[in-house]
Image (cartoon, rainbow, N blue to C red):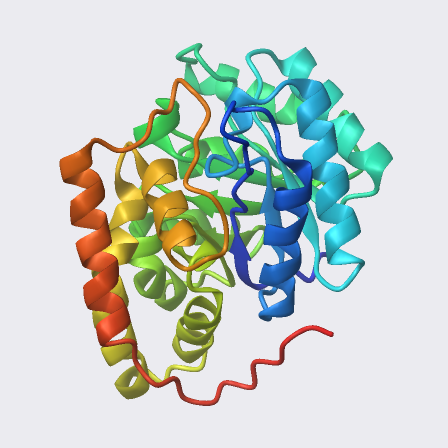
Amino acid sequence: MTKTIGWQGVFPAVTTQFREDFSLDIEATHKVIENLVRDGVSGLIVCGTVGENTALSLREKVAVMEAGKDAARGRVPVIAGVAEFTTAFACDTAREAARIGLDGVMVMPALVYSAKPHETAAHFRGVATATDLPVMVYNNPPIYKNDVTPDILASLADVETIVCFKESSGDTRRFIDLRNLVGDRFKLFAGLDDVVVESILMGAEGWVSGMSNAFPVEGETLFRLAREGRMAELMPIYEWFMPLLHLDARPDLVQCIKLCEAIMGRGSAITRPPRLALPERERAEVEAMMKAALAKRPALPDVGLKKAA
């Protein structure tokens, strides 16, 4: 029997904070997470792409997971990204998330290796059967080069711990194709910021968001308006947000998101190599986008958003 989960709403892919010397700043990371929960997000993804998972050692990943659990204090679900080179290493990371007491894992394809479809399926099956935690399968072929197609996911429908699918290809037709194959077997999450409304209209119940690190209230409001079909109220916010949401689809999305987060006073723009700071021209472009956005920041309608205590 498939596990039942209550995941829905906006789950920011939380940034991992570093000091000037690129060492892990766990206190600052804890503060970032606390502030997101305080502002009313529905859940958290730690150690995801935006959290620079692949730049962290296992010890550091464990520290970030522990910070996420501690900062959330049970108020929202905390899910840990699992991004490793081998299935065995991914299983070890998933077991650490379970030991810490997190609410689930978001599993990426085995990194570096360009797998064939049956190998991609075997990786997810291997990790999902090594843990009792609910598993979100993460598809992001532009970044990770392995495409988790609806056919591949449908082949995993018998794995009870796989409960959720995060789609970041940008092709919202995938949601319909998957439903045509397996109905409502998997909970669907949007994974690319600049098609979030389209994804929700196609059935996404949640959104793993990058730019909601900088604008968590706007993110939750946009999501809830879309879920409620309040299109007339939604469109001015979506149009205002879209230039910034496009940043989530760039190869340097982490640098862009962390810069926006820093401008909002919510974190540091420092990324760990091989991710380098944005070149001066690109940094100025993002800063100009933020200046324009803040000058026209929209009034938000009531969607019942309650900030956490």
